[in-house]
Length: 152
Image (cartoon, rainbow, N blue to C red; front, side, top):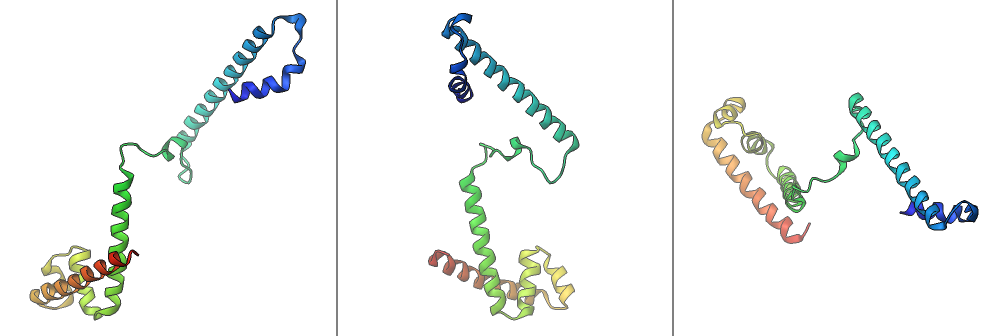
């Protein structure tokens, strides 16, 4: 519609009364603009198909940049926010506890290694793995609550 109105504004002075009615001329102008748009869309689709065929990993097709309506963006946002809070709390606790204690927590809780793997790797008992991971986890929970209360 915009293209047609622009063409009308630019071409109205070229309209020749002797060649036919204004209404007919306007209808033909609209048809030309519609045909132009359809040709443009076909070219764009061909370019898109060509781009996918050559698949440049650094470019994203327009259709792939449109949000999927089946994805609940609020839920995604909330999960990301919780992850950021947890990461910040974990970083604070890391600076506050002994490196060995944090290493146990990291291997057992964050990296999900078994108690036996952590104990064997660090040459400690299984009880030490349980105690250290429990203590550090408790501190992380406290930090999470502090961060959530402060609104960070």
